[in-house]
Length: 78
Image (cartoon, rainbow, N blue to C red):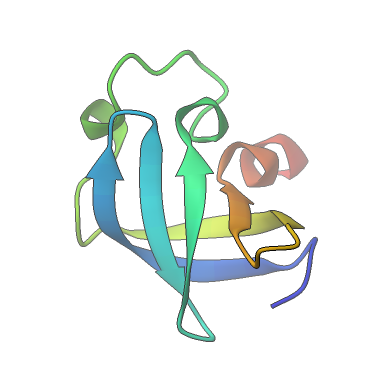
């Protein structure tokens, strides 16, 4: 997995602060609530459901291997 790369992933878990998405290669990353959409998102479940297939861009992989993802970054490009 590389920073700046766009992957297709499946939403595997919803949380108050974002959603966990499993992408290829099978790694989970977090799409923070602020990275879901250009518009303000009140509740993650308003925009996403478990099982949804979404396109995500890798923003960062930290030293602990946690992956930060964005859906908003892709929308801004297109």
